Image 1 (cartoon, rainbow, N blue to C red):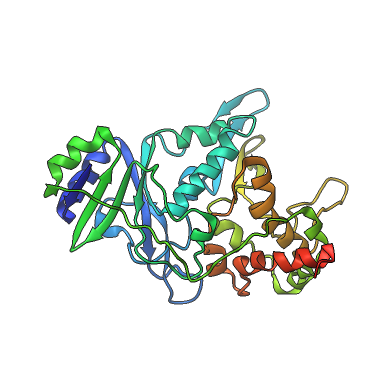
Image 2 (cartoon, one colour):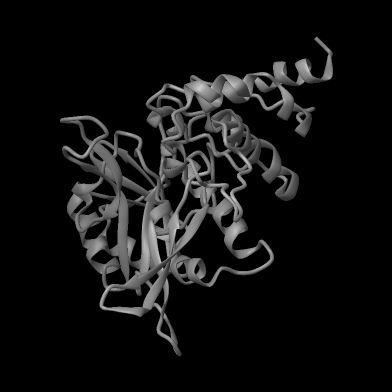
Amino acid sequence: MGYLLNENNFNDVIQEWQKDYLIYAPKKMLGEGMYSDTDITRYAAINDISEIEWEKKSDFSFKEVLLPLSETLFYYTEGTVKEAEANRKSGAVIFLRSCDLHAVKRLDEIYLRNGYEDFYYQRLRANVRFLVIGCSATYDNCFCVSMGTNHIDSYDAGLTINDGLFHINSHWEEMNPLFSRCSQKEAEVVIPFVTSNQINVKVPENLSIAVNSASLWKEYDSRCINCGRCNFVCPTCTCFTMQDIFYTDNGKAGERRRVHASCMVDGYTDMAGGGSYRKKNGDRMRFKVMHKVYDYKKRNGYHMCVGCGRCDDVCPEYISFSHCVNRLEDAMKEVTGNE
């Protein structure tokens, strides 16, 4: 079912949604960019449709709505443990692109269907609705077509903007009466999805762990500065670390938090006794790349990377993840001697 709404109509819908949901969307943060006097686009709660950044790709993904950067799991004293309340008690509506909704599928696989259901993820994931923003053109560094994430139908509602009107394709039957009541008219709506990107990525069919010994990884020992930005903007990077915080006024009480972590930074693989699995930046790059386009697929049948290209956008050393993946074919020839 399709509906055409003007800005005032859409704000009426948002006001109704806000009775049960928080609304999250990409929003331009003035002056908060990586460099002086630059802006950044990241997810935040909105109250008005005019707050949404429609034109630019968000620098950060929706991920923090479902996986907060820092989340208290429980509080403890000498004899008691109390579960922390969720950061968000109401449902949520998230405006996002096709690639990011594909990333939600990856997060669900990791946190809900990977042996044990993660309680803290599940309670934030429950009652979340997704509104997909159509992509009429590709963005810099995107390679979603190569990863098969450029198109999706499993949204609650799809949205595109034509002639100043918001065109809604709704699969959300519960909300159809609201859309109908607020719309200018009903019409067939087709959500646009890109069919080509400027960047194409090819994962070699014969990719195996033999590529771990290829020489290309050594190049990243000096190029990468292990800042970890690529991990924090990635919608499918999910690693975290645990921190026990002891209160200064009572050293026997405190709280346990899980905090986003990065496999690219120093200390991530440090072990008790002084051991460390991946000390060199090239080893960390190899782990990240292979996890995204090999390990995860071996277990789940599809790639972990969704091709959003944010890691390439944010790297201060201009390291390209997509270029690295495209080098894997030659790397396999090197290690198998089939040049």
